[in-house]
Image 1: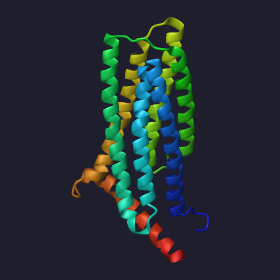
Image 2 (image 1 turned 90 degrees about the horizontal axis):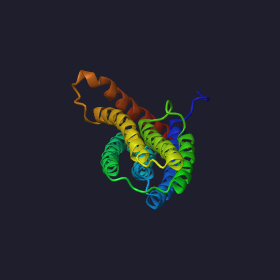
Image 3 (image 1 turned 120 degrees about the vertical axis):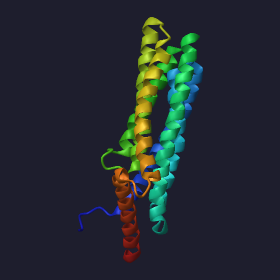
Image 4 (image 1 turned 45 degrees about the vertical axis):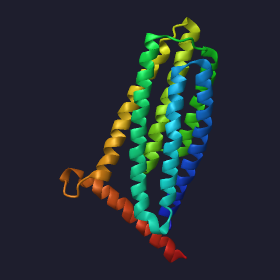
Length: 239
């Protein structure tokens, strides 16, 4: 029993690493917005838009994790985590729609792109996303909220890779359509992850209590609430 990690420590760790991820993501979001505007790169602007939703989504995730630390808010904290994951997925769908629309416009009317600054900002964003993934830890031991945050960061990582590749191609050949084309590829990859996350969180939030197919989602939600409640009782008894 002494070797088992206390649930309160696990939730506190989630809140702390989400806070660090939020700070790093917000800082590099500003850098990518500036870099995207100055270079004219859709790939950078798309990744900056995704980082904008990440900043809001990580803030929601951090708040939900903090709620889980309150003795009287265990059940509501778990519910808040499900809502945060659901909102994360919806935000990603909006970003995907914007990327696809803007990419279509740029394919019809190609724009001049400053590939040098674009490459520098993209590589900086790539490093930042790798740091955030490291901060958030492995996905197998994360709650749904942290898993949602990791999906956002993975999307950002793909965006940074695509922007770097596009910048290299433009520097080497001058072919600017590669920028919106790779942006579309990233948008489709983000769409797949968002759809999975949306389905999982919606099933847990809106399942009818008498629907057999959603028994696993209800059991998972109930188990999370019971664990959080036992955590709160344990803290009260230890005082």
